[in-house]
Amino acid sequence: MRKPYIAGNWKMNLDRKSGLALAQALREGVGDRTDHDMAVIPPYVYVPEIVRALEGSPIRVGAQDVCDQVSGAYTGEVSAAMLKDVGCDLVVVGHSERRHVYGESDGLTNEKLHRALEAGLEVILCVGETLEERQAKETESVVRRQTSTGLAGVSEADMARVTLAYEPVWAIGTGLTATPEQAAEVHGYLRGLVSGVFHEEVAENTRIQYGGSVKPDNIRELMAVGDVDGALVGGASLKPDSFLPIFDHAG
Ligand code: PEP
Image 1 (tube, rainbow, N blue to C red):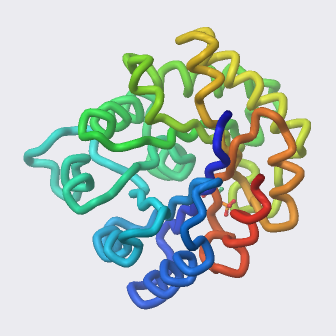
Image 2: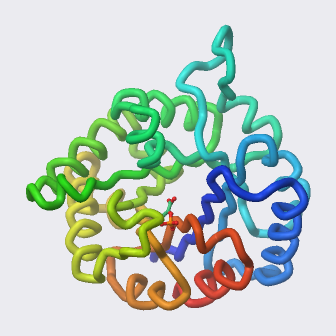
Image 3: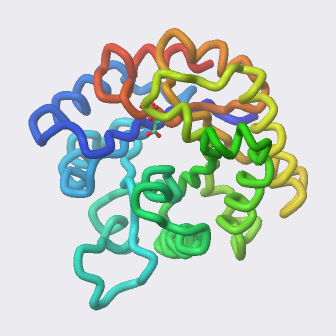
């Protein structure tokens, strides 16, 4: 049984005050509920303070990126061990904005994923096709390449700390959402891929989030898809009024 998992990616939004207010409102709204998992993913600089604000709450705290190197002369970077050190629980790797705005490759994404797992963090690995790739009927080949390279070298045991997020690039921040049928197709394909790379039990236990303009009014139909186990939410995670209903309606 896969527990619904809702994660909110704040991207480069909010400031210290509004981030803390959001964390506090989520803390009150979630209480001690553990039937679903929730994570918030603030910008790096706010991670320690949000960790403190959520201490004792079941809400987990993540980072939006991590360095592919362990330590050393990498100006501007933040290591997995540093994130672990300040109480961070998880990192996102392979987000489409990292891939498409900053040109990050599948290989680099895989290195980041390994540094995070080695440091004891959990990982959300994002995959998804652009509109042009979908129109060219390349969705499966794109998510296959991103998933198989992204997970290369990961052990079966470590897969317990990996969540996949299917985020069609054309649906991120655009107001366009994949239909439940489109989500079902790709999520089912991804589960089959995980089964092929590892085995069926690993695939059955791996959570696959959907991401792309998730809102309170579309979460139910997406969660009704058997292979959709939660959501990675951008814009709608910035306000308790939209993020808490998504959490509430997720299961
Ligand atoms: C995201 O950034 O991962 C995302 C899905 O954004 P949005 O919900 O705003 O489309």
